[in-house]
Image 1 (spheres, rainbow, N blue to C red):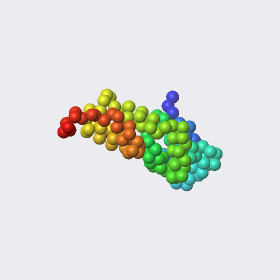
Image 2: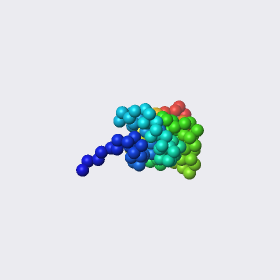
Image 3: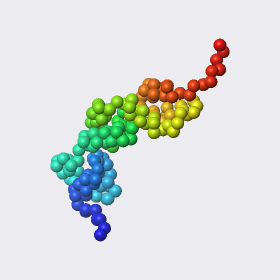
Image 4: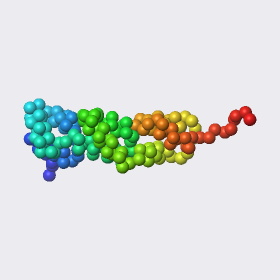
Length: 161
């Protein structure tokens, strides 16, 4: 028995939202991919919003929780990704603040660093690569510097005494 996607846009939207939280922008993209006409898309989106099935704010909060707990990303990156989903800045900021309210960003950074390290930091080039990778993950430079400071390779003492 094969699964057939519903032809009614509203039902199709419910089916998609039952699987995972989606933003309005993401849902509109899925409708466009299925070649649903604009009027039917607008009607379905409006109905989904009215019955509470589609809620960008809820999507932002769910995404932020997942990004912080499972993927070990920093505030800046999580905020950037939520805004890219088509969610307004205010809701995105609220979601990120809530996700980091009960989680220490330094601990999230430590987890991200642990994922990248497979032993000690070998040399300064390795240290720079780690720093860049953690910056891309959205962690502040000052926090990265503190986390990497005690892991920095200690150069052999070549100073003139």
